[in-house]
Length: 117
Image 1 (cartoon, rainbow, N blue to C red):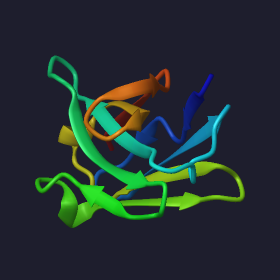
Image 2: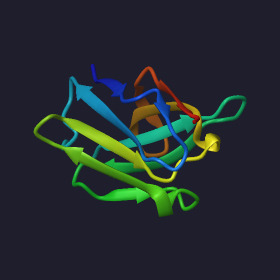
Image 3: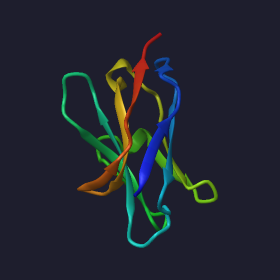
Image 4: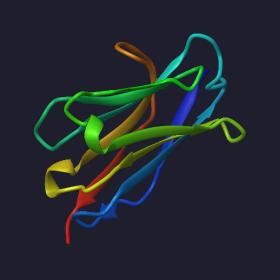
């Protein structure tokens, strides 16, 4: 069974870059034709898909976040990462990594990130 685990700082200052890593076990991020997504849920709001990286390294982003979002991977560690630049308090959310592009078979437990000075 695939397991995903998010890691990264829980507190980020406004204007800084939020960086999170998802470590995958029980499956390879290079397995055809799997996709690996980042999803967030701000307090009191619904889930928001942020972007994804595919088995072949191709990346896909939400149009509303594309200008300050970057997703990358380290195949040697079976990890993929999220960077969100120029964060504001509106980026405060629980951040999840998941396997899938539009529907998700496996999820990480989520990590709370607060943007505050």
